[in-house]
Image (cartoon, rainbow, N blue to C red; front, side):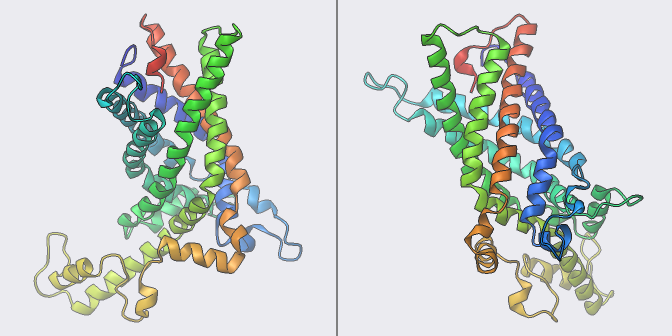
Length: 358
């Protein structure tokens, strides 16, 4: 990739992610609270139904975990995206009638972004679970840090931190598949228009501004379309604490019932308990809870419950707010990323070719 090294891509992605996290995080916190099942109970006045001051407290709760995880996840995303896109373009056969290749460019961008999201989500899921649960912690003076409180709830069952990976990927895959082709097309259109009018200046600021506007516009459209998936994802991640606690308590009860004598595995659990844990993976082991309540709710079932309780407007809850913060976030994210890549390459005396930028 002309002009840019892997280090450039990682640094630019990390700076972009850090910038966005700090600036738009409060809007993300509000969106999470709007979409939670406890919104009316925690954040509205029982008499009037209007938001109470608690809704706007602790808007940065959980931001630390996201910053720590976003840096490597964003670097992984951009590195995977750039390399996958370059590989697909390289193997894309061209003909006289289609010099740019038989596979349409938007499809290449969507495929590359999908691969990148799968890698990124694996790193980001625990931070997302911690973040969204920390955002729901009631803030008060002298209280323990919200992130620490949330982490303590997962101490007995850390694997619950990965609950929601499928939901996160299920939201991000269609989001990026929609956003990146629209973003690429809009950016090319704006640059072509400026070239025809003789307005192109070729500066880092101009490039970053065009990228920010294109990414923000495309991101807001994709955000609105994928809002129902985001609502379900939020509910799944907010339930991770409860599910993890139940699983840990059930496993402890099962172990106590089995007894401490007999063979144990490498982790100190009885062999029978370990077998039961493997056999019943994904559901509670508590025999006192009916089987239909033991199983975690599927995303489809959660979606149907939301519609039954709140109507179709329930699965679009927070859509407008999500569109606003995604417009700001995507614009800043990709604008800073592209500007950072150009800046880092220029510092070394290299040039980044236009075709190498997304």
